[in-house]
Length: 344
Ligand SMILES: *Cc1c(COP(=O)(O)O)cnc(C)c1O
Ligand code: SF4
Image (cartoon, rainbow, N blue to C red; front, side, top):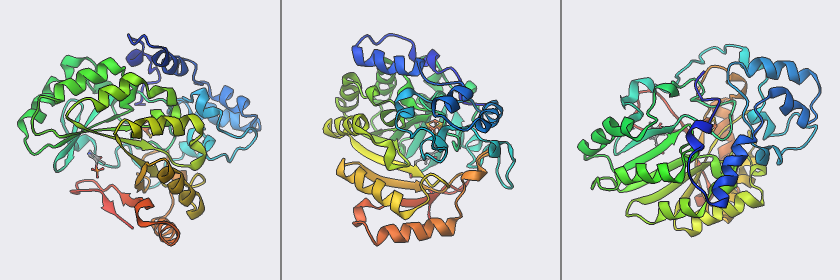
């Protein structure tokens, strides 16, 4: 079990502004009990036992802001399906493994993954604001990643020495689980490195707990010479309610390039109609659809898989309905390759 069940360790410090307190309060109030999750959505009782069992492999974590966007009594709700442990997770799934994308082989220093030319990825936090059942890093050894600022020293040295690195991606887990102060410290370590031009953040927090987009986050991202890029992760248009659209607009208005990535998920968004609606909503908010990922074959996620040829057919239907700039690239990650592979 990898993702830390108690994200509080990394968020419980400092930050005294009202909004900072409220996103941290939302984390504290999140649902961690699988039975409570089932009951608060009025699911049939047979879901409770399966949820309890499957959550032993990977805990439940659902903030109330996200829960509030689900339909009560609907076990097929596309948001619920992303977070509800079900019996299928316990089945092994042929070809599904603990590290399907070769993360372990790409570790160059503690917390530093280097797979592709000109950009590296830092595992900035092991915690997330939601536990997505299909997560490809659900078995990642987060406990071995850096926690204190000193632990980042070897990774920072590597970035300093390798002048081909132009972009540093903060990922995890979710890097926005760190306090603004800690994020500013990390960015402060990168800023003096002349060849690093861009700082990218891969996060689900603006979508799960939109109050995470604090004034101090916006100013720490926009007031430096590193170009800020934020890649959010939205799979279904029902994830975008009014607070989420306001949070995304605040990022855009602060001059940040905001992109979206989705994972193609059976029973969640495996339809041209759903994904077309999602792309339109995103573009209306000036968020550019970036990637639609083919599911990584991580143990416990096989029930989410959509065959590649169906994914390609969905993409082709979308292309017949959307302007070119609203089309995500449909990609797959294959271990040992120089980039993600574009499928359509
Ligand atoms: C996906 C990924 C990236 C980013 O790839 P882009 O194609 O630039 O979005 C970088 N590093 C690692 C290790 C990745 O898995
Ligand atoms: S937020 Fe991202 S890293 Fe965290 S569980 Fe979801 S998919 Fe995985």
